[in-house]
Length: 188
Length: 366
Image 1 (cartoon, rainbow over the protein chains, first blue to last red):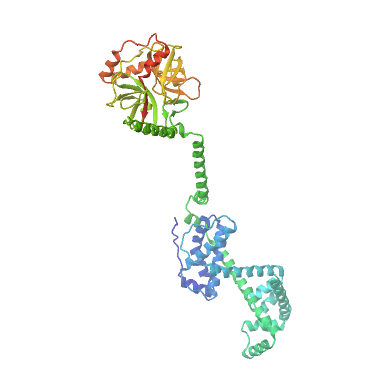
Image 2 (cartoon, rainbow over the protein chains, first blue to last red):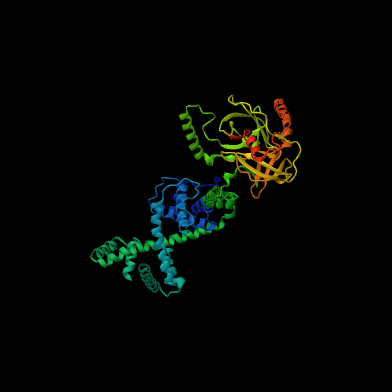
């Protein structure tokens, strides 16, 4: 049934090293190598291309978290891991849409990934909270926080970007913003 | 604010060794600060990871933009996807629906008795052999009783004890033991017995069958059978005219039954020229009964009736019976031609019947 997908697939150790180093090249390689497999899985099980994209990207995030968490033991092929995660995620979505009784047409081997996904869901919830909090924080606080804490820009850069007269003012502003964000985040 | 910066510097490991020691001491002595550090650490981590995730997503989206999704789709998805996914999705439902439909159809046909009427040809034509399955219980009871009687009487019983599958009527063609009946009566028979009015059964075998004319000729092969006296009736060569009074003797039940009527048409079911239409009441089991006119000539063989019309029974014309005799043994032809004159002419109906009765038999088919 399954069309054999022929593509240049990076080796698993190459990928893991690439993830740890934050290599864009490796990301692109994994993406191109494995996306067709997931597209097939989702579309053949009553999904759309966008569904496939969402599910696949989520699985990559799970993979990144796992690798960066340092507790990644490669006891199966990376491909199998990604496929299993996507399958699980897609089954869950299907059941949410109540369009499926729990059976889908499989194309690859699967491994149990429930544990990884539990952790992922927990974190996902936190991320959603964070996103909501940041959104409610409003500008310019949002950008300041993002620049400093996420994009790791120096106080001087932020100072220049927002036109603060000196770094202390900027720091002060950043402090206030952070306090508000914390309040919003823990409040939810 | 200063404290927050210190906490952040501590968490990021940007402090010098002395600063760090001082901070840790302060933290140990101040539970509020300690609490703040504990909360701040995962918060910053979440914030940071959130940023990572967003960055990763945007990178992936950029990669996704480059992909030719349609081409990949072509490659991995078989052409007839829509039909096939519909099929996989709904095949269970379809299977259930189909089985329900099948069950419903058969249940309906069964309850409306469709299967019980397997011998009615297409629309309204009903061949008049009698199906015995419904009467089996009664028959078994009856044969049991008979058996008991026989045992008591100490005599050997003639013929089979089990009830037959179908019965019809037959009548003697010659005195030597050739019997004529309808072909449909003995169609698919394993064995054939005839039974006279006294209840004696004799084994018979089919010697001739003509499905188109619906005529069959049997020969009694039983050693116990003693030849009949010469036939009282003759076979009429010409067609009978409309309105002629006719009567028939047959076995729609265990005893012989008389039916009277008249020839109502020169053609049979759907214009079949082999048959007459007779206005006469006949029933299942009457198939093969002789149809006689007032003078005692056999003018036909009762073969069927129309279900959806009143008084429309059909009989095969005697002309065709005589026609098929060409294919029969010489013995039969001579037997018939020797009998030139009906001995029934001028007798009352009751006398005629009394004479004919001995020559009319139940044909039992197993």
